[in-house]
Image 1: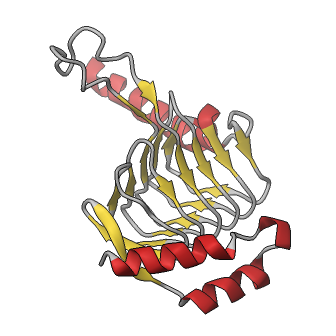
Image 2: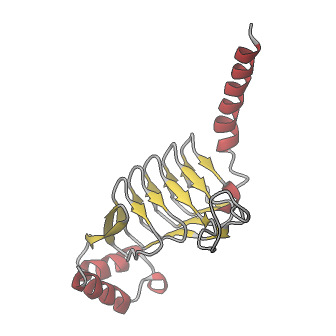
Image 3: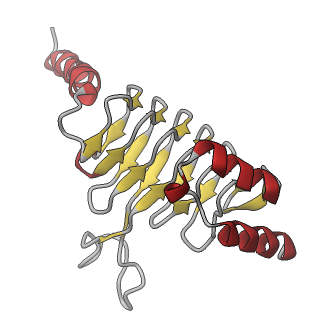
Length: 202
């Protein structure tokens, strides 16, 4: 048997172990609630992942968080092929170029997904993105830091932007009363300001 074939067999075996047993271990996460699920195969920097109650990440996802944190709060879920990037290269430095001196000195940029969020298939969350409570992110969306994603909005596109609210203002307030304890509810004034501001700017 040729050496190259033997080498490939061992490589495939290690790949199976890595994405089977090792990827399924739960003791290496920054935090993972017992009810959280990360479907395999998924490549992830576990030590900076914080997955709270009833969260789920679809298979074939890539969570690149070796500098910044990826935080997914209660009852949020993603479809397959989620991509998260929680750091960035110092590309704004004058005279710098990809792969040049200092290129690997990345800056952390936490990515936060609030409660009750649905991330469709093949969504990308770029460095520093903050997805508001109750958002729906359309399949294939690329979310960037310079865009704002308010609670209870439907967002999509590349770059992803606000499309509309999934609830009226009164429905948002009622939903907050049903879903959250009083001390955890979003202020009515915040919801009202968002509703007026985002529809005014459309």
